[in-house]
Structures are given as structure tokens and as C-alpha cells.
Length: 151
Image 1: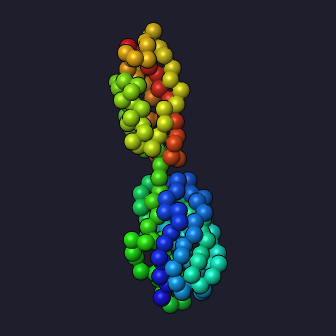
Image 2: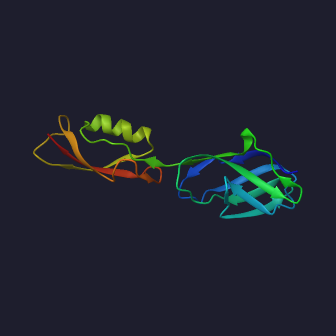
Image 3: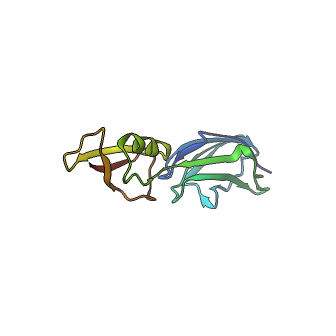
């Protein structure tokens, strides 16, 4: 039975493409590597205790279990086989100050993008009137959110 003892790195963007090393035992006849229920974009068995795999893309951020399948069966689910997909989940920043908006964006894996001043506002007193993209949109980590700032 294959056994996973570590996954490095243990996180990556929802856009996929992260190259990772899976270490463990009994990998020599591995026929598949899955991230949750999704097959790896690619993988190679480097040795009986090492696999190099490329994470597939996903629609949702969060934790998935990596499973290695061999003729002897699937690797057991443990805390050592977890991979976390990261993303920017756009928060609602409308009617917030820039300071609060920056904190909300950072906490959700996003960054503040272009700030357009309208209605003769100043950066210190203005509130956000409009944002792009809309709240709830899931983007790659570090994506920028553009805002219009007004009184």
C-alpha cells in the first residue's frame, strides 16, 4: 500500500501549475495521483519514495487530500497528504474607507488595484463608491481590485 509522508509545497494557487514533491513509500507502480477527485495535471514516479506532480486547476480555494494509487490500492488519508488551494475571494468594499478596504482585501488574499478619485474626494475622507470585480468573485491569489473613491 502506498503511504504519503509529506507534500512540498503544501499550497498553491487555484490556477494550478504548482510543481510539488510527494514523499512516502511504495510509489514504484503508481498509476495515478489525485488532488481531491481531480487527476494531477502531470506526475512522474522518481523513485519508490518520491513522486513529482503538477497540481491541476480548481474552481474553489481550500484543502484537498492527495491520493496516490498503485496496484496495491490507494494511499490512506492522513494529515500529511493535504494540499491547500489559495485564492483571492473578492470581499465587498463598497462604502468602506480605503484603510478598511485594504485590510479586507489583504485578509481575503487580494490586493488594492487602481484607485480612481471621483466627486473631488481625498484619500483620507472618501468612501468607496464602486469596485471591480464584484464581491464573491474567485481569482488567483494577489489579484487586484479596482475602486472608485468619492464622498
